[in-house]
Image (cartoon, each protein chain N blue to C red):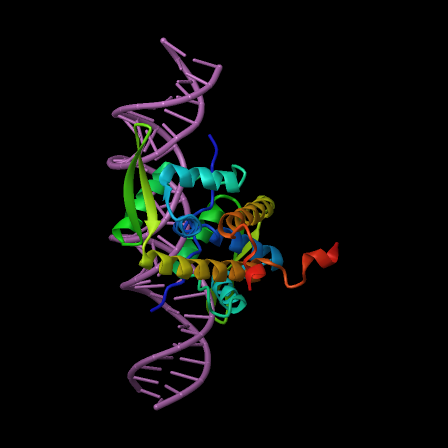
Length: 115
Length: 115
DNA sequence: TCTATATACATAAGAAAGTTAGGTATAATT
DNA sequence: AATTATACCTAACTTTCTTATGTATATAGA
């Protein structure tokens, strides 16, 4: 019923970073973790998540391990060596991008000074 | 020869905000302003910019005024009332999104404390 | 003079990364 | 019995960008 808006290109970075913080995660767990961390403001849709995970596995950034839990299948993902390198790289890119966004969007004079 | 990477959805916000800071701007001027503010790190491509400007004009966010300068045509864009409202809205969304990104990507314990 | 660069607009084909909607299946709750 | 939660998946479509191309004038350099 509602829109998440604005992830656009940061989903891979989010996945990589979460998997650096926690060694093994499965898809559904990632969606719940993001929902929890953002108080429900960002909801990763399954239509975005699963194709992204498959793509990253195909690129060699992630490895998988299937596990049976309570008669249900879970597919756990972990970072490869190359995935760890990609994580660092993407985090740097994202920080640089956000810094640049601030340079563009923040008025020259700090608006807080005008209060 | 090089890639800008990572704008994805923030271009409209950038255009709206620049036009709030400076009443009238033309397309080429916007590309130069962004390049200048980010020390060349973000380059708005024309293939992204012009369609975005046309779309925003069609949506009633921008109005245009064509002007002749040195035998060359310039198309100046300005915010409409609705464009100003959209600017505020998009800025809020973007700030909220960046805050959420920080919540997801920043480790629970401030890394600066580990230095 | 010719060429390249800068200024200034524009479009079109294709790729990338989402949304929305659907499907399968088990477990737990109402 | 029906709904919600858990857990995976895909396919059609849309949005937004990249890359490439086109037009035209002005200026600077070889």
